[in-house]
Amino acid sequence: MNARGRVVIAPHYREATAFSHGLAAVRSGRKFHYIDVEGDIAVEGPFKPAGPFSAVGLAAVRTGSDRPAGYVDVEGRMAVEPRFDDALPFDAQGAAPVRVGDRWGLIDTAGGWITEPRYARIDAFGEDGLAYRIDAGRPSDGYGYLDASGRSVVRGGPGLSPVMACGLVRDDDADLRFLDRAGRPAFTDRFDWAEDLDPSSGACVVRRGGRWGVLDAVDGFRAVPFREPLTAAGEVVGFGPGQGVAPFLDRNGAVVFVNRAAQVVARLGVGGPGPTVGGGATVRPDSPGAGSHRRQPVVLSPGPDEHFLVPEAYDGGVVGLATGLLAAEPARFYPYSLVFGGRRNVTDVAGLGGEGAEHLHMGAMLVLAESHVGEELWGTYGFLDRQEGEAFAAYFADLAAQLTGHFGTPECDTVQLRNGDGNAGRVWQVNGRRLVLEVYTHCGDGDFEHQLWLAALA
Image (cartoon, rainbow, N blue to C red; front, side, top):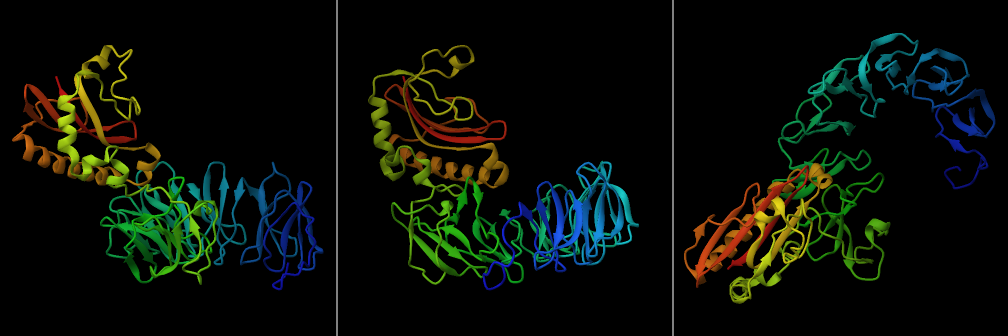
């Protein structure tokens, strides 16, 4: 199809690359050849497979799927004889990553070695003229980028991203930061979290000092007044390829789209039964009031509305709840762990024995609030443990102050409903019963939980 939308080559190929140097690799059946812009065969081949022509006019090909890879020129001549186990495109400076056995090196356009095979991995050169590489046998610090001469210009550890865009790369080996193509810090900022820069928009979504915002490759960080970036299956949507905008959740549930300058360009209000944003709803940038969506879940910044299972506890009703528990008929209860036991009714104690018996109590109990962050989410957003811990510490302090104002000075940590990794408790002696407020924290195998419990022990 040409720029006017007219079909110039009929769609009868099973696979095709973009045109470069006036040629495109196309697959007919199981083999490739190259056609010109008129659709005529220009390089017969056949190849299996064939890549696009790079800026230097060479393309990586194989004459069979189990044969070595080499490079052909635009005339179809084998410019670099096939002798590699893998071959990636040449960059504009005339260097290409190739693999021999399990090691990667760089060659020039004549097939000579720029860097003999010694790396465990070299990616294709990016638009910034650098190729991500991993040293063999150096798992802690053998990461970085090579230029076309084979020189390491950026060095780092496993936290160094393999994605460089707009001359910047995310580095999460110590404090999260961005480095320029010389390996120097690009900004003074240190971030809580950041995605890779999107090359088409020159921006990315970041979190700094607990605030979400947009990082512009040129102008740096700009905070946004919104609750969190929109996520899909736990991943920040961010600046997608070619979009130029990133969606955020407003505090009223609206989805707000901002550009690289953190300016609002579109908004989706909460409505129904409109399409979900994650399902591909499209909003015109020139229609800021158009469209609606179903309310999206809060994933990265839950608050009281998401944490509290008993809302009146947060709304000033904790003394009333405590009074009700103290007056309740005692029964056996068990404080379940979300990491180990999952969410269950605390009075469901049938079959508990052995090690579980030590956490059985007699009285009445309410789970006021809870948070469980799974391994995948915590692994991606490392700030969540501190954020959730601080939230539950604040809830605990607030409720303890209310209960102290009514029941008097408590004892500290004299009762523990369940052993955890950082519990805090307050105990009030009330008419021969013990009123317990406890924040329970536990870290599992990659996940963690916080729960806020209120119990009256017989």
